[in-house]
Structure formats: structure tokens, C-alpha cells
Length: 246
Ligand code: NAP
Image (cartoon, rainbow, N blue to C red; front, side, top):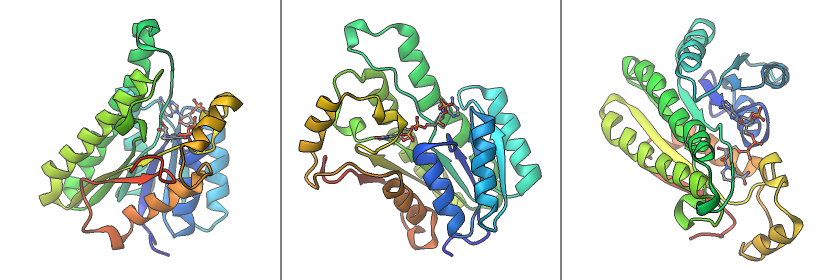
């Protein structure tokens, strides 16, 4: 029970990697707020988590909308009290090559992935500064480090998360706040299901361990960073990619 009685808010937690992080952290004893666009799916994950014997609430949240972020954090505080860990996981893709990319697709991805991380981190830091303790863990991506054809908006947003993380780590270390990122490679979720079989096979050949990752592989790294064992780690990026980038 490495996270016993810690209160955690996870964005985009209704499915995929966010859901695996939510369930994994709950199994370690944490109380979880499942914050996602889809309230029905969030409520069903929260219900599953409550059956593990910890507290869990569902919050309807669009991370790119400041008003919704403010209201979600307000509800969180009312329902669960202090915030120990924020996991910035919500993310989207809208892939195409640079010359074909519409401004609205650039804006949509930057707004959810990067601005959403900024808005949620800001509300979390307000609470954590008062507590003189807190951890912010944000989900970046391997493509922040390698680039990826067709993902100029996505790779820029995920590289932005790395700069944002290091800056929070430097600005608030003296207030007991740690900020780290994890950078997954290819993880089997709805997001990667859309990729064609041919491209998936090509990608698999670029992974030294020869297999795609599972959402739980990312969850284990997030649990570690949230735990006491990782208290001396801040401003870092943990790569979880089967050796795809090293
Ligand atoms: P996913 O299965 O698509 O899940 C993402 C979740 O975020 C969905 O429940 C989605 O809700 C929600 N969401 C989308 N926009 C949101 C918003 N504006 N506000 C709140 N929630 C929102 O994706 P995933 O594969 O689990 O990815 C999770 C994170 O890991 C993302 O940041 C992604 O970029 C990152 N990542 C994934 C991989 C991979 O290989 N899968 C690799 C590297 C990094 P809806 O379904 O209702 O839109």
C-alpha cells in the first residue's frame, strides 16, 4: 500500500492509460478522482475503484476549458480534501503532415495536451503550495524526443510538457512540490488502435524488446513516481518504451 490515503486527481482517466493508472493507484490505497470528458465512463471507473475499498469520485472535465478546471478542482477539494498527486494524462491526436495541418487541428491538440496540463498544474500548485507538499506527474511521449512524421502538433505538445515539468520542478521545489513526466512509447489503447496493421508491424520492429507496451506498464512508473520511494526525484522524464528510444 505505497499510496495509502493519498488523494489523487487523474485527467482522462475514463479509459486507456489513465484508467490503468487510476486502478493501479487505488490498489496501492489512494483515493481517486476520475476526471474525464465522458461522465458516464468516468462514473463507471469510479464505481470499480470504490469496490477496491477506497474513495473515488467522477468529475466531468474538459482540461482545455479554464472554467471547468476551476470547478473540477473546487469539487475535488470539497469531496476529498487535500490534493497529494495530480496526474496530467488527458491527451488527443489529430495527425497529418505539416503542410496539410489545419490551424484548428494544431490548436485543438495544443489546447488539450499542453494548455490543459498548464491549467490543471496551476490549480494543483495553488493547493500544494499551501500544503508544502505535492506531486505532479504528466504524460509526455517518446515522440517529444524523436519527432514523428504526421504528428507535428502532438510531438510539439508533448515536448512542451517536458519544459513545463522541469519549470514547475525548479519553481516549486522549495515548497515541497515534485514534478516529473513519463514518456511512453507505443502502448496498446484506443489511441493506437487506429494505426494501420502495416505501420504497427513497422513500429514493432523498431522496439528492441519486440512487443508493444500495456497501459499497466505506464501505470507502474506513475505509481513509483507518486510513492515515497521517489521523493528525491524531480524534473525528470521516465521513458517507458521497450527500448524504442534510449
Ligand atoms: P485514450 O485511450 O484516447 O484515452 C484518453 C482519455 O482522455 C479519453 O478518455 C478521452 O476522452 C480523454 N480526454 C480527451 N480529451 C480530453 C479533455 N479535453 N479533457 C479531459 N479528458 C479528455 O488515450 P491513451 O492511449 O490512454 O493516452 C493517455 C495519455 O497517454 C495521452 O496523453 C496520450 O497522449 C499519452 N500517450 C499515449 C501513448 C500510446 O501509445 N497510447 C503513447 C505515448 C503517450 P474521450 O474518449 O471522451 O475523448
